[in-house]
Image (tube, rainbow, N blue to C red):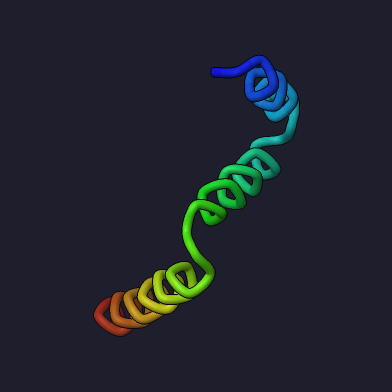
Amino acid sequence: MTTQAMKICQAAEQLSPIERIEVIEHLFYSLDSKSKREKIDSSWAEESELRLSAYE
């Protein structure tokens, strides 16, 4: 890991757990194209609805 990346990680460790999750999500989603991310989000929404229906 580069020095710059290490500094970013150390700074991130000072954030609240929720803020760290938000940073992680942002970085994770930045790896995919927007269209792919939208497809994944849509698939998860559909899956959530199916699971809720099954539960009810």
